[in-house]
Image (cartoon, rainbow, N blue to C red; front, side, top):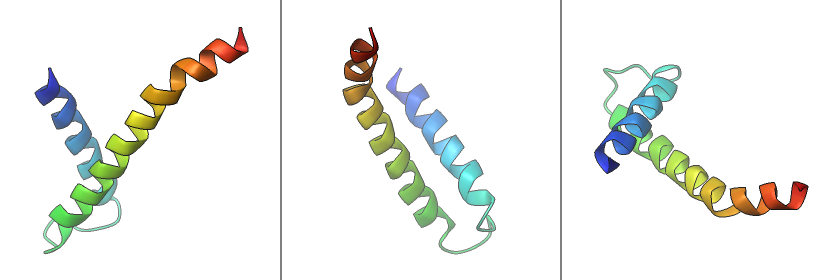
Length: 58
């Protein structure tokens, strides 16, 4: 299960980075790593604060 989530995040990060950096560039994996870490941090914040925001609306 974790492998599927990690692979989805890395694939999405690869697509996002491919819009700005060519895949044959030397630093492409570094940019992909940075974008994937930002996506993981964003997902963690959403999981952490999501239930609190939903419960306030009710």
